[in-house]
Length: 125
Image 1 (spheres, helix red, strand yellow):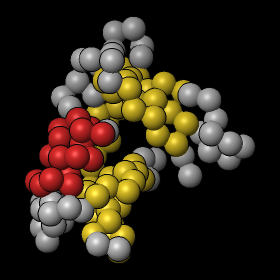
Image 2 (tube, one colour):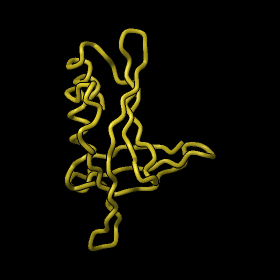
Image 3 (cartoon, helix red, strand yellow):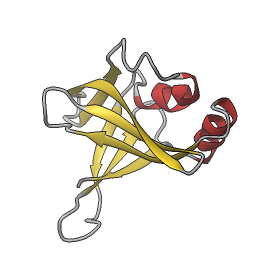
């Protein structure tokens, strides 16, 4: 994440990433939301994704995200490319239930199928 943040800032004229969200994964039109700081203002940018859940031969669930294009033609995707390449990787992600963040927020881990060292944590709102 640190490398992605540095790349984003260097590529997009000093803007900085505040948060990344995956929204509405249980809905027909999920999306990735980026919140970034430009000057002193926070802006939001959405990228539509398709979520596909499959199973491997052992019965483990694999989540695959595919970006739906064209998306957000008024915003350069250039600074987001490392993250978009990560989240839309061909191998997909194993889903790991993590400890609850608090009483109402579940936390999951996404583990890259092709590289178990890549683990990202996401929590539910």
